[in-house]
Length: 285
Ligand code: SF4
Image 1 (cartoon, protein in one colour):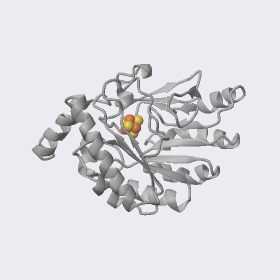
Image 2 (tube, protein in one colour):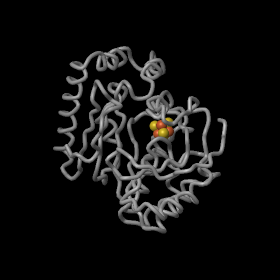
Image 3 (tube, protein in one colour):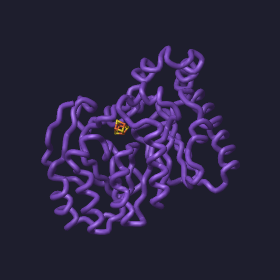
Image 4 (cartoon, rainbow, N blue to C red):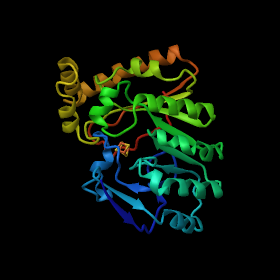
């Protein structure tokens, strides 16, 4: 992994994602290397080596303080195009510096993560009761994680982290996303999650998210042939996709009946224009 340093002009940016009005990405690139990551295809990031190089925004804290002099965000989203708690964070602590500034100005934030390294930051995050963590738990098998997310945390590390977040009473949503059809079973994923969770979303994978061909290559002959060909069939045309989305919705509704205390959200990207889509993460099922 090549490390380079960025002296950024702007760390707070406006966002279309309906979870906050501003977003911060402390790094450019990501060590976790998920094949479905849409950031690797994002031309705005101007980083063809998204998984092989990591840009460290070394002046993030100073620029954030400066921007907050002029901008008053209602809420900040952390980690829309990078993982805030990747391994180099232990060394450079850019995310930690950002959390300290946001806490100082009492600006609530929502964090997107799948990393167990967030454990070290839970006391900081807990300082503001409005803060929230969206924690990704999109499969139930370490074999699939190894195939699709080479360096990201294991199932056990994620479950332990979820328990810690719950134990600290920090607002939490479990993000089952992207949910890739036939690689894992939704019930299986759901069954290993702690029973105390109160909010779950299921975001269906879209074939323009990350690199679908690489995903198919990675799982070919590693999952059974039936599942492999069914996965391809889901994305063959809008009709097949629609049919799958409706079946999945029925399964989620069954889960909802069995777990009435949990709020469910179901996110289905538009088949034809994924990138033009404004996805609504706040619309309950
Ligand atoms: S952890 Fe997030 S940002 Fe990093 S590669 Fe995976 S999906 Fe992309």
